[in-house]
Image (cartoon, rainbow, N blue to C red; front, top):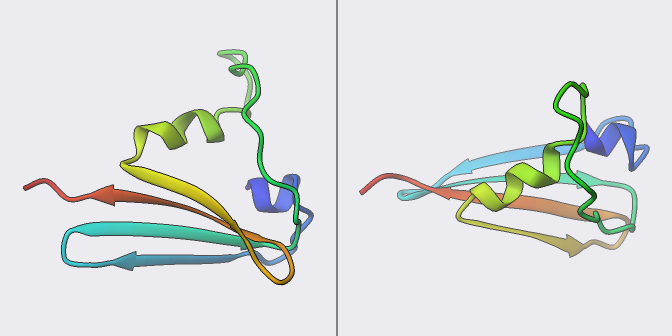
Length: 79
């Protein structure tokens, strides 16, 4: 959703890869602007929680691309 709303990317690439012990999800968009954490959303708002969920993952990050960026997160499987 953020790739459409904030980055203006009509067809963002979403890649999900399941490795032996990790799920990695990446979203590529056309905007070079890095995401910024804002104040928590109003509890009744329909949006505004995306980046607040990212710290619940095991790892996350943003990397610049030739055109745009990739935002990713990883979840480890239970051992």
